[in-house]
Image (cartoon, rainbow, N blue to C red; front, side, top):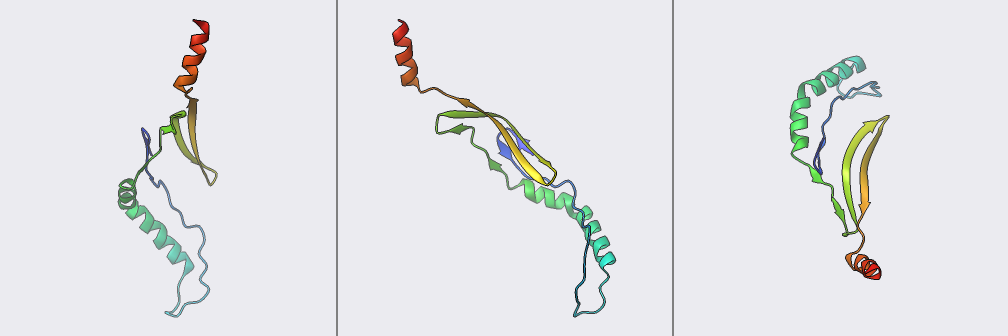
Amino acid sequence: MVNGYDLSIQISQVYVDKITVQSSSIGFLSAATLKFELNNGFKLFMPFINKNLQSHSFTVPSNIFGIFVLSNLTIGYYNNYIYLGMTPTFIAPALAVEKQLSVFQ
């Protein structure tokens, strides 16, 4: 989730696809039952997990060394990749601009 330059995480869906039980020392474990219970557990506890994740946000800097200003912050997730997009704008040093302007005067 993006709020200005503050980023936080929100999980929309967790799905366990496959479970393989190699061995068990406590008795018979059904992989289908484990899969069903985990998927239902994630659905039930997702609001609590998201509330905890939102309390841990971080801020993306909007100014880099006074040379670039970052704007139009976007974040997304597609095809197992997270992307972060920003528009950098170069800020010319004030002394160099003054020298250029003095040439034209």
